[in-house]
View 1 (cartoon, one colour):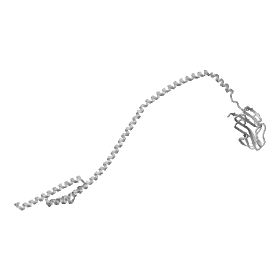
View 2 (cartoon, one colour):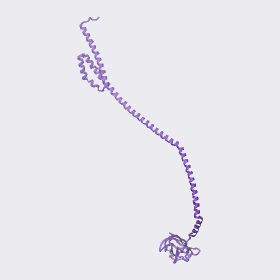
View 3 (spheres, helix red, strand yellow):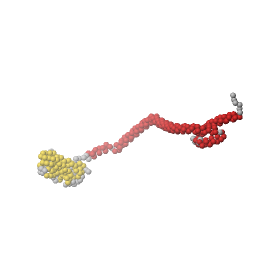
View 4 (cartoon, one colour):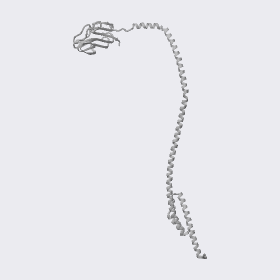
Amino acid sequence: KPHPPNKNNRNTNNNIIQITSTSTSAMMMKMILISCLLAFAAADDHVNMFLKQADVDTLAESIKGKAGSAVADALKEASTSSSTDLKDFNSALTDLHTKIGTVQSTQMGLIKRVDAQIMMQNYAAETRARLDALKSKVQNALNRLPDVVDQVKDTKEDLIEYGNEKTSEIADSSKKVASAAVTKLNVPAAINTFKASAARTERKAYMWSGWCSYHDTRGGESEYCHNGQIINTIAPYLSREGTGRFRVKKNGYYRVVYQGIAHACNWWYAKLYVNGKRQWHGHDYNYNTWRDHTVDYTIKANAGTVFFLSIQTSCHWKWHAGNQNGRHSVYQVIYMGDY
């Protein structure tokens, strides 16, 4: 059964209601404060400047004077709880920033790869376009090639036809010129005159051919003699002097030829003297047997030059005597021509 109301009970109930209201107000203020703090944290990384413990204590003292110690205690509790929640939030926010940085770095790498791929595709497209243009030019040139070949063939045929015409014209003109020349110059008579002149100027051989008519069996060196004679057509160019010498009458080349057998006891020597000086020298080994020896040498001599052939051995036969049949030894001088 309820007690009758009295003055004291009314005051007690009022205190209860006041405390309840105060607790409710404290919780609401706590929630409002946390919401504001979270809003500040989301907007700015420097939220802690608004949550310094000294500011909270000052605010609590102010509220205590107006709303009572219960509200102040609730506000302190809310502040402590909010500080813990804010630390967790800051840690999560830092981790989120780190992940965002990683995502951004990965994004930049992907962007670079995509840019590179796009660049390669663009280069490939440009290259393909150039190749297509080159292919088109080549194809156009190939398409024109048959026409060019036909033009070349036509030009070749025209040139051949023109050349044949000119050749025919030149041949006809040459025939006319030759016929006129024959008529004017009396070619048959000219040919006959040339033949007669050639017959008169036909070259004649100029030479002297003979031998030495005696043996020479003494040791030492001796001049081969030319007292035997077979042919003598060299008189206009050469004359004989002394035992075996020749004097040149006209400038020219003179060939000296000797062939003879000897029977020496050692070396056999042949020498050709021109104006007293030895110009040619040859030798052969001959020991107690008959052997053939040969001299063949051409000299260049001026008019007045004197030359002769000399043979040398240490003993026995320097040369064997020749005869008109050309046996054993022969001596020849041939005029070869002017210089």
